[in-house]
Image (cartoon, rainbow, N blue to C red; front, side, top):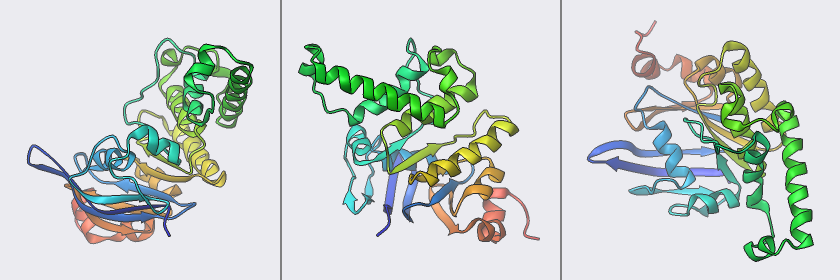
Length: 254
């Protein structure tokens, strides 16, 4: 059974078919990429899978469980987290505090216990902080812990957002254009980092425009065009697909 199964998923906005009948599987332990030109429906598909947008038709199953219509926070609780194309960090909070927010989905103490400052909440808060610091160290950003998150450089903010997504201990993470705004050195480091994340047992589905990154790290690639899937295969096969060359790359077949 695949960890994620997307079946005949469709979504329209004002008569425009953003996603039309898209189906694919993501196996556990895989790095899978969604590519396509601007307006292909990639981010809409992410929003449908993660619960931020309700599909018009189709089904999404995570670990065999239907999650269509499940609110995003419950989707995260099931073990499916994500980052965003436009970075969404909390202003006025440190990088560490932003990561800790992601960790709190695994907290056990309720609102009343927190209000009463019970010893159990102190212990849990200390654990949340400790695990968040460990995760930032894993991503190489522990030195940024006390910095105000939104004042950091763009690439550093990307890393903090990734740490926050991983803090919930997901079984699968959706990365929406993680290399956007990064230079070549930062992109190379990101490639290594995504591989290390997979090695920790986290399955990865990413939307990305950087084709060198996609082809280097992906096990499989899904290609979208005008909301429809036009190809799905290993990176080498996708690169040679005449329809992909014509529609996505805009080149003539050699």
